[in-house]
Length: 270
Image (cartoon, rainbow, N blue to C red):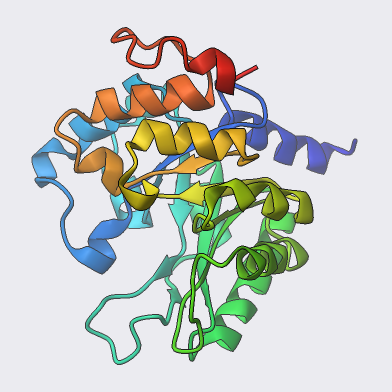
């Protein structure tokens, strides 16, 4: 292994702090697309809850990253999201780059993320952005999380398993280290998607079909997902630390003081 690849390996290890090869990310970049997710004065408290619950990383935009108390990130990685859009644009599925890898490294990021909507009118530009960011990540030895979704006027079913297998392989072929996508329906077909893809596949959000978030996580991991990236299910929860702890109990086998998952974890986490 070369010194350069050692740097990538170190950052990847930080992204899976609690269990090698399993990931629990909490995206909190929604304020660009949706507006504030929490009162500004309580943002660091939310980050503290996420870390205390056992998340591996938070995902934020570069400006918000500068506002996070560095002490909170001793036990949690930082992923800088490089894509942005708002619902006020002519094309709500368009994504543009608003940062770069070097800037993220200067901010202390362990990884960067890029959003691509396959099937959107601006798919070509988004794919080009993904490719250019992947090249920069290779030069800087920074993991790249590609958030790739079937989303746009030509997409009939964004949860169709064959379509999801296609989009995660697009991410892999263009240089992503990890890929996040929507859940398939039925969820059991997640195994087909994972088997088709040479990089770890994480599922976004949930729950599907009204299932409890912890049950969705258990089903996703049992079907082969390498982890989850859950934003609204955490920061909109009345007790964010509890929501993250329940997810961490499933994904990483971390103790849950409430013991809500007792008897189920052993069947999901070997």
